[in-house]
Image (cartoon, rainbow, N blue to C red; front, side, top):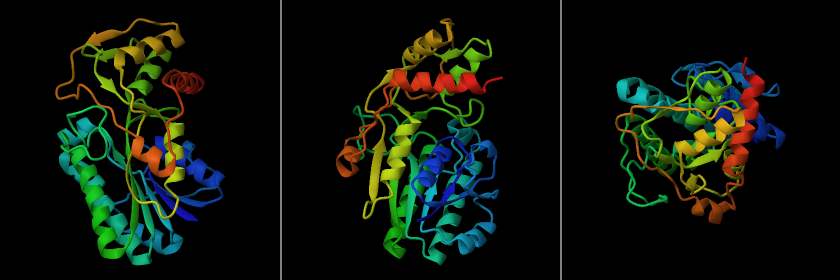
Length: 306
């Protein structure tokens, strides 16, 4: 199968790229390298350094003619989406429409879309949230992902382009950028290994559903199945607070000291998603335990931190 991956030089999508190539697929990557890194590209990948808003996207689709698009390119900084919602919409909405139109014109059959299982649900009414939980984003980022989901539904109705929407929990693992598309695990690893004291926002009791990147890759492989379509939560269904992450990473680093700072305004207190639909529909389940994933991630950062 010919697969075009957007954002393929980034954290999650570069791992997906490697898995697709290992499975025998022909892969091309589109990435503007704003947050991606060329070092993450597989040598067997055909690479286009292009922004998804560019008209050149249409030329790439005409030339490569992908059967499927795996769409990971995004503005994914929640705080930036609040401070600059116009930029967020330009990337996450208009850029996505540009891809959909290019796909429609050449007859691409399917999209796999990386959505969000935290920001799209907002403050949850029950825990863990399943796919039928109400959608009430509390940031432009969450809203732009919801808009993307609705565009996929529209393009399926109008043009028959099928889709699988994967609503990710908090993904962590090797290659995560501790500066740009950062998550707390990457930030803590980088701080600990550079002899800086990590800062915990607020009391550290805020919880998230942390899912290891290898498990997310398996979901993206399963999403290639036909005739699979629909929306699926990709998480563990387990809440863990920031203090637990800090304690475990501190033990790995031999530096158990963390500092607490002020809480971030508007930060969700609890976020955890229910992955049972994915387990039932395509036999996917998060297999990597938190301690195991944190150790793998910390070891990777130790090897790559100068």
